[in-house]
Amino acid sequence: MAIASYGGQSQQRWGDNTATVGETFRDFLITDLKGVPQQTMLARKKGFVLVAFFTTRDETSARLIPLLQSLADAYKESGKFSILGVSETDDDDSVKTFADVTGAKFPLVIDRERYHATNYGFTLFPTLVLINGAGQVQHKAKGMKVLDALPAISDKIGASVGAAEFARLENQSFTVAVMPPPPPPAETPPAPAGAPAAPAKA
Image 1: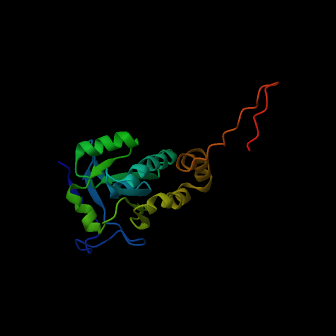
Image 2: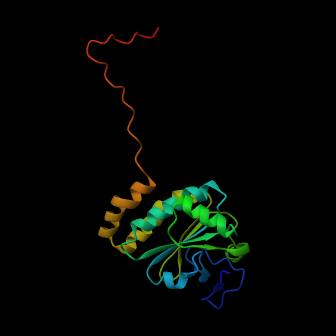
C-alpha cells in the first residue's frame, strides 16, 4: 500500500491549487512501485525537481516519458536534477508495463484515486511541474504542450548546473535525444557504366 502525505506550508488549505508558476509547491511523499518513499522536499534539496503527472492510456504521455528519461540521463552527472513520475492510472501492473515499454528509469509513483491531482487542481494529463530547491514552481505545462515545453525546462535546469556543463550536456545528450536531426534524403544510386539511360517520361 502506498503511503501518501503532504507537508510544508501549514497556512495552505486542502484543495488549493499550489502548482502555479511563482507559488510554492506543496510537498508530498508517496511510496513508489519499488517500495521506496519518494519525497519532493528531500529531492529538491539537491536541485530542480520535475514532477510529471501522466496516464498510461494517452499518446502524449507515451511520447513524453522517453523524452523525460533522456532529460534525466543528460543531467544525471550534475546531481542537481531529478524527475518523479506520478501515474494517474491506478493500477500497478499497467504502470509497470508502461514503464518497461517507455524505458522509464526514474521513480514512478501511483496517485491513488487521483488524490493528489485533485488537490492540485489538475484535470488535464500529462502535466509537468518544475520546482526549484526553494520549492517554487518555475514552469508548468499541460496536455500536448508538455512536449513543446521541454526545451524551456531544459534551459532552466541548465542555468542551475552552470553554463559550461549545460552546453556540454545539451550538445551530447538531451538535444540529440529529444530533437533528432531529420534523416538525409535518399539518393538514387548511379547507373552502372554502359547501362542504357532510363526512358524519358512523356
